[in-house]
Length: 95
Image (tube, rainbow, N blue to C red; front, side, top):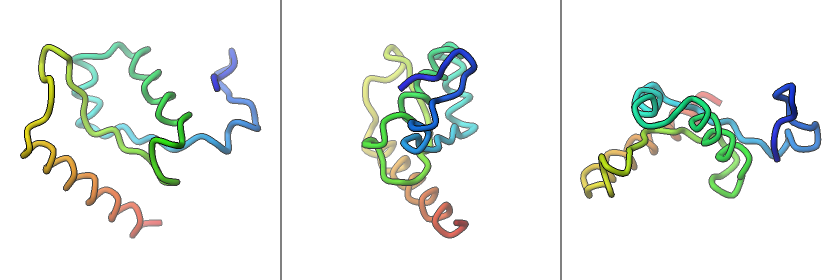
């Protein structure tokens, strides 16, 4: 599914799109490793593929360049999981 020249999606496809929230930390990290065009493509890919998450907004938390980090440490994974759980709880409480 891709947007047309106007940037709009066909009406039939809009129901499949998911909300994607780019956190300030993600945007800051993305500026260093992704072009604006590639960042927008990442957001579009996540929004267009509902199988990557449940029926809720998807939060982009961070991004790393390949030469910066090959994988997360156990502590980094735990921190991201904790942040994701807090975001999910806050989102569910506010909706």
